[in-house]
Image 1 (cartoon, rainbow, N blue to C red):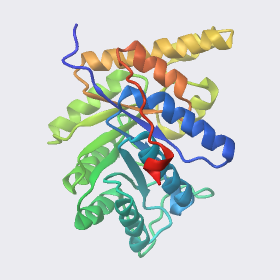
Image 2 (cartoon, one colour):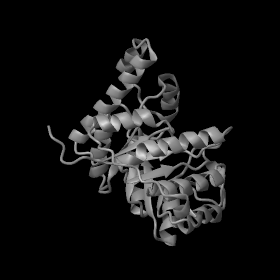
Image 3 (cartoon, one colour):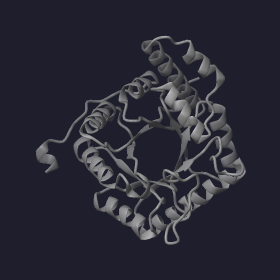
Length: 295
């Protein structure tokens, strides 16, 4: 079955915490930028714990690689004024895209508790950004239900509140069973959601680490996937298996009319690059800004 069109791509990075991590981030940017992403995003720690590193990463990616960068923004452990000050800082840097998230509870806490002077939800955060104006806002969605939501209907209702507040699209948590995404997309449409729902894709760099993260995120890891990796004896076998699984997942989503794929890179570019090439992405030459251009 031919695809209606090749989907747009986007990539998530996280800010580096050391010199070696900075080099890895830049290698990731250099590797993936030629694929022509619609945008890339840079994560942001709870309460601004990575604030300066996030700002620096955004500036470097935007100015050196000339990519459209989205800054993440969360509600955790910060006042409304503090959160919106970050948004205004983004705007002063020329960043017009924001990924608006409630955020996970801080370390040592099992539940999110809004500060009395803070945003209580992502929907409130989107409303605050809409009052500032001038941002293209993405929000999160959960095809298998957010771990804290009572049921999927309540979760979809919360997604609708975020989109009605002014968000342009939703980007999902990663998943491996496409049926979960397709059913979620159908139920969202039945609930009156018309904004794009972009599937979040996680190429499997490390199966054991991924399964631990999936358990925290309420993302099903199918039994057949456990069996497949258990029967892949070498690192090369596991890499080929991961490439096949992710490329097949993306291929099936494209056949279902998905028009945008968002990849969680974990600042490891090679598998992500290989998947994109396997599904038909054509890289262009990367044109980096010179030092004089950036100055």
